[in-house]
Amino acid sequence: MNKTELVETISQRTDLSKKDVQAVLDEFESIAGDIVA
Image (tube, rainbow, N blue to C red; front, side, top):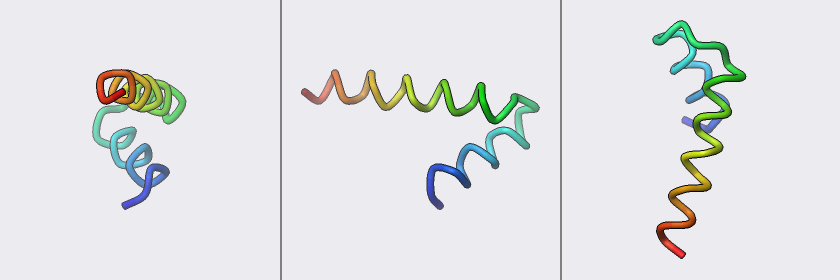
């Protein structure tokens, strides 16, 4: 599963917009990157 498919799946299961899901995942990646760095 790639990121686009993940966004689609989460959007369908949560009734959140793809835009909102994408924003959450982008921030998650940013925070996770900060923790690892």
